[in-house]
Image (cartoon, rainbow, N blue to C red; front, side, top):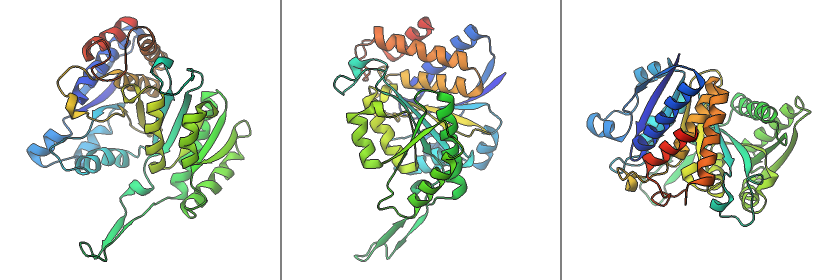
Length: 349
């Protein structure tokens, strides 16, 4: 019996979560596993009513679950940064979800903005360090509000944090067993402290993985090669900020945010899975948002908790729908409503 914590969140989050749960129920019947879910109201509406984001008691309860399924966080009536820090980052940091896992996979070349790229050309995974770096929130203001103001934001990297991320990436690359190539994406030429640590750690850990080919690319070069030669990549490991940037570009070359799912992973604890596209408030309540990223997140969740056959079947069902049914992956242009797309996946499953 798996326990799934559900956080629908803001904007279109509840709409895509509904479709994800619909597919989860169908998968449980087909593959014979049992689960129970509980919905939590963390997000903008709760904050506007109570002034609360996420409290220590909430974290303690979430630790009792097998996994978390998140819709979206972000409310137009809440100042930017409050919910992101108070809910999203607090979840990641408090549950030590130190890996952000982002598969970038092209399901249908018709929806790819790159010329002449096929599904076998765009099939790689970004392993992003998820608990340190510039997103740690460390820094200060000096002389704030004056002409002499100085704002300092610290990129905080520990040997422990860097090594566990890199080691996870090597293990993932080995398990994925595709090209068995791991690329370190950084900026060693100018960020000479943090990336000296990353490069040294990467080189040392690589000695334990003789079966994995390794290389290095600056982050700016990585974005260039994503567009020109995405087929070069298999698994990429990088820090928090660079990972945040390159995975959005990855989403575009795989067809858009409507198909992009990600996992916030604690290999020894509770992990959280979500569509990465945000709350998209302008589409709220219109039943036009693409739910496939949320459904793919359910597939990732199932694989993570040990139901690998079910997880693969969910992704295969999404692939069939993307290749045979949809006119577009963009909201309002799919040829079907949000709920109809969810029904299509269930029938395909």
